[in-house]
Image 1 (cartoon, helix red, strand yellow):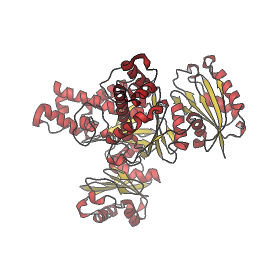
Image 2 (cartoon, chains in turn green, orange):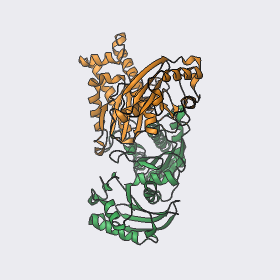
Image 3 (cartoon, chains in turn red, orange):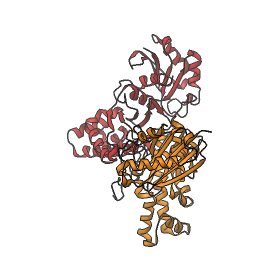
Image 4 (cartoon, helix red, strand yellow):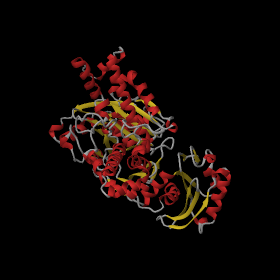
Length: 298
Length: 298
């Protein structure tokens, strides 16, 4: 069975693994990334980390997932808050020159989407739309095992979709941006507005909803409707076979997910009803998806 | 130069043409479709029409554009208001058996999108999003000269995207569906609400806006903002290289189009600004695009 190297390059840690084409992780290690030291030191850390993996020499290629918009063609970071000194650095070229293996990179959400599309919840479906609901909300379209990144790597920036133009402006995102209304961060904010500092995270609001607190149930009901609006615009544009939904907020799926899907199905044409909603399945979609980049591109 | 047959099968007429791969129409004819007679008589009319075209024998394949959702894989109509007796009939197979040439079919909007993407406003761009604003509003995503039709042929049903959840419910479409707020039909309705029966169509409202009637300008301003909301959600999902915009309402582009684009550019991330807006260019996008189906699939 073929093997590939998957790398998850973040602001705190670099994680790397040898992954089989069936998605099994054979060996995984991590190191601190220390991005403040600059691009080349980070590259050297990544190289050492990969070389410490059992069986790295037999891998067919290397794939990387990195936060923020990525220039997938030239293998560079376009914008980054966590890795500012790596912006514009020819990461893929540097790593490729060292290992003499093909190197591919993409945004971390898109890479997770690829993993879920090929081996997780989207396995076997031609058109997969992946959504992650966590502190933020992101998405990615995967058609026939290829991620559609868009002209500028911004395809899937669905957190900025306005689901209601009559909301407050919170930040740089659009008024009513779904990320400001239905992400983990948004649910925490809404929870605090009602319940005060006892709310530490979205999970606390979900817990109150489970105990049938009416105010918490209202927050969850609004969240379910707002998310349905977002899924509805994606549905009318893409008409995917499956929505695969992941991210930390899915820990509260028992309180909002069925409600959301029910609203969604009232917002679409009859002919679109065959769409399926599935939960993300992989334990390590980022690492496995990164390893799928060379697998699906070679 | 290779030649293909393009067919536009509508409820009133069938039009067919021999089209060169550069988009030039060498010979075009039409016949009444009489769909009330049933599927086979319509097929025989189409066959006679194609056989009346000079040079049809030398064509490499046949492409058809048909209104409504199409099962592109099996070459059948899924839903149709104009051609109800043809629903489920194996159109592609019937025509292919007769001519012994490959036959492809897709929805008329998607076929026009393909024509515009390959030879019109989207020529040379990898990711094209085509929007038609006419009595209704429809769209299609074309990536590397392939139309993305979705699981059920409903990808691009953007008329049903809600751009404001605080509007009235008019019909089966969603509350605030952009087709009910910014299509030619919608502008006519809004014009009549203000100006009465003197408004025959959207063009009358645009004409009043040109003469700086404030109420007409308000209708146009709202339309521009509503359309920008729709383009914004498409942009965040697809991040295309170009939006190509066609349809009869573009006759009023001088009054709304720049306003719309200006709003759009306030609704997207900085990194998405390279997107270009272009007007549809082909005189016969439906026929030419239909002929592009065999060209891009063979």
